[in-house]
Image (cartoon, rainbow over all chains, first blue to last red; front, side):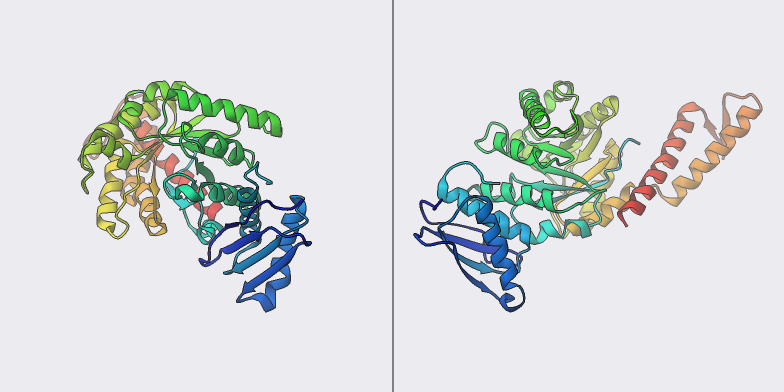
Length: 92
Length: 295
């Protein structure tokens, strides 16, 4: 499944993450900015990808700007962005 | 005492930093707020964030409530359905009236059935914050067996009444007295409105004492710095505890002598005084147990 329109959720406040989704014809791609990318970059990307996988999304470009978000926030922001993109039911 | 809820801290529903730190605050309960603390364009994001937080964090033994949006708003029903599916302890229903409580109860019935939760296990607290709500408080209480308590919303109530909310709070006396009496009659919690000047601790202390004077069992807080004063204010003083123990000793001695009344320091002790003394010691025990559980 691919997303229909660009969307975003979250913020750049401390403990949050800004998730921007862009329609794409390619498989899931994640561009991550984070001050802790070196330590936690793979983990953050995995949390994003898992959430997209569970929602059945296969084609999307994700731009993520992390400010120290925990997993529950990362997943929440991805789900909200997805919901906004689809304008359909929640994928939670 | 059925439940200890001296302080309930409001936490904005779209603030990940505060939500994930909820366990460190010493409040007896947390109210995650999807209503006033969340802008219109972020309602969906807050709902999802709180849902995920409820699934992620075990905040027990704190009581966890979620203030949803009013049921007559576009967000309210979906808030209840989504949040209830994560099984918070209670839904705090704003602008509560009889119809809203009944409608909320039906939504909770639906979720509990679909999710296999125990029937009536998700409770309701009614936020009474309008003149209409106050006048219909009795019907609100009768509207659902899920109701565990009432929270007075002082800001909205005074706005609805077109009166000014003052530091002294005299204008809230009628609402406090009426709701405290109703809650006592039905065995419910009466949670007093938050004090909104977060830097005025003297005013907060006075406001808590006013709430206790009218019969509040707890008070809401909008800042973690308010919690300690609220918790402390509800704990009986050493003087109260000593008095209660002396009363019970005097009463015990009187009963041995077959008397139905006795005196302590020149004041008459009869059954109502004994009940009051017992309640003080019961509260002390309950508060200490709660603090041990929270520590």
